[in-house]
Length: 406
Image (tube, rainbow, N blue to C red; front, side, top):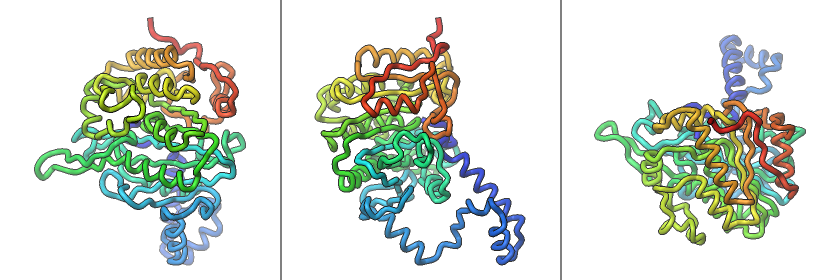
């Protein structure tokens, strides 16, 4: 999960928007002067120019964005798709997702991060610690400026020709909720749509129709998206039984407190996502109130023994530590010890699990340019992922200083 400002893909976009406002403020009131300045200024090339969209352009974009759009009809680069049916963001705004059309029969499913919401305070408009709409993502893709794993034009992108579906996160429920909950009382009451599971199902339905039989699937996500990437594995595996699946949870190690577990899952109605076809995870027998993320990983790794499951984290992740402390945890040393214990537990029980632990306290890697340069113990993360998804055996990568405290 992530703190109250979303740490994904938006840094460069923010700089662009601020620069655009400064340019507009300096351009004067004359429309012709604005146009002349835009023509002369290199920075104006990255302006979103939303107000100049013609009715014809808007109509074309809307047609392309409908859920009926086939993958063959999508434009090069990233495309927004507006699904119909039971999809919505937390406060009632529309949900949308984004598709990069590839040329190979391989698929990336990426779950976005962005905090969580399970109490009056964490969900309130004033103090919310989650993202409640897809507007930031829409601006990002309209800008054409994407970084990290989203940048398929990067020379070192591991999957430049794969189909890539980016699933935004605007429901505060780590992509698994199926409830409408009222927080607060009286005139301070407000309603949140914890609708993450239905939003994801709409995306998977579109993928089934448009990418019916992918050979390989890479499931990943940063922070809250890391939980989506593992919890949706059984559903993707059921939809694509012949596909080889590789999963990478980025900075979502599941070190949480009992109170958070007790409070969040019942509110979100998150148990509905548990796979009824896997006995060890059946909602009638799997006790979420006493479970851990390592239990999810080990049970899935055992059931899907030919698939590969992985996790990435830094040794002192500042954001995971922030949430751990907010839930009543006792700080970075305790978080690190419990994180290492959790990963070791999965490793000992699951031959098809690998971990990559980097030094420092940075939260998430896939949204950033460092995704292409990070190297630990002489092994670049991007090469580790390429080898993984190419069927080349990989081993755990753990920095020398990444040891539990004595």
